[in-house]
Image (cartoon, rainbow, N blue to C red; front, top):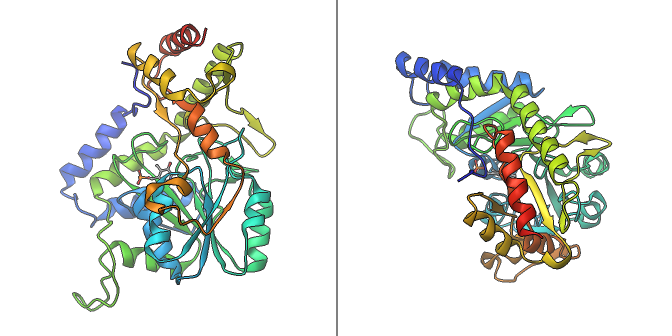
Length: 367
Ligand SMILES: *Cc1c(COP(=O)(O)O)cnc(C)c1O
C-alpha cells in the first residue's frame, strides 16, 4: 500500500529526541520547549510563540483568548476541518460560513468581505492544501474595523504570501505539527503572535490557568502542554523545513507532469501571483463522467494499493450544526468538491516510481 502521507523522520530527528530523553527533560519543563518556541518565532518572523499539544488545542486557546460573547460573529471557511468550528461553538459565538473558490479551494476574499457585519469580531483565515488565501484586502478592512484575524497556517508551514511568511500574518496564527504537516512532533501545535498580552494568555490557558499563587484558579483552562521530547523533535524538524518544502514542491510538479493529459480530472493550481503552491497535499477533482464519484474512484485506488483521503465535508452541513446556520455566503462549492475530490499520496518519502504507479492506476480507472 502506498500511504497517502508518511512522515519523513531523519537520523537528526532521532538524535535530537534521544538527547532530550537522555537529558531527563521529558515534561513541558526545561530548556527544549523554550528553545523550540524561540526557533519558531525566529523562523516565522514573530515575537512570541506558545507550543501546545495539537493544532486543535491551539485553536481552542486562540478563541478563548479573544473572550467572545454570545451574539459575536466569527467568519470562517465552510471547506475546513472541524477543529476551527468547535471553539467558536464552545465559546457561544456564531459561526458565519464562507464558501470556497472551486479552483483554489480557498475562500474568495470578496465573499469574506461580504460576510462582515457589525457583530463580526474575528475572521479565521485558513490556507488550504498548500496555497495561501488571497488576504491583502481582507486584512486591511479588518484593521479598519478592528476585527481580529486568526490565521490557520497548519497546511502551509514554509509557505509565503506575497513575501510574508504564512504564520506571521494573523493577530494570532496557529500551526499543527501532526505527522502529515511540514513539521511534525507526533502530535502538537503552536500559537504565534506579536502581542505580549496574548502570549501570556496562551501560556495561562495551556497550563490549567495557574496564577502566581499556585493552585488558585479563576478561569476554566486546559492541560494543552507540549512535552520536551516533542519539542526536541520539532527543533530538528524545523531545521529541515526548506528541504521538506522543496521535496513537496517537487512531488507536486512531478504529478502535474504525469497527470497533465489525463481526462476527467482537474489538477491543483501551481501558481498564483502571491504564491507558488507547496502541495501540502495533492488534491484532484473528478470531472465529466466522473463528477460526484470520488468515493468510487477512491475505492478502486484502494484495491490497487493506493491510499487517498477525502476532502473536507462542509462545516455548515455537519450534523452537529443541526441545520441551524445563521449565515452562509456562497454557492455550495464546498459540497461540490467534496463529492468529486480527494487527495493522492504525497508524503515526503514518496518515490518517483510510486508517483508513476499512482498515475498509471489513475489512468486505468478513469479510462
Ligand atoms: C491539521 C489541521 C488542524 C488540526 O491540527 P491537529 O494538530 O490535528 O489538531 C487545524 N487546521 C488545519 C487547517 C489543519 O490542516
